[in-house]
Image (cartoon, rainbow, N blue to C red; front, side, top):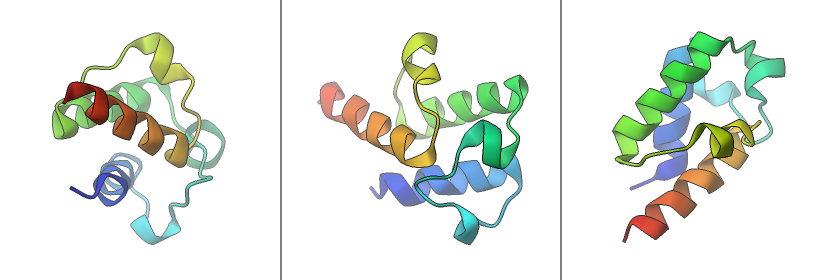
Length: 80
């Protein structure tokens, strides 16, 4: 499974942006103007897509696309 591609598809869908414009350094709040409801939708879609559970405390640390991808990969490894 390509975690990076799948996560970027989720982000592009929720924030209605072109997937090609998403970089690892893209910040959810500053670059995508994320609101609380967007973040909730992003967390729900991510948990659903990758079959992982996240904690709000850990999730808040992820400010960029690449930080979140790294976090998802870590969660997937610990699931095995």
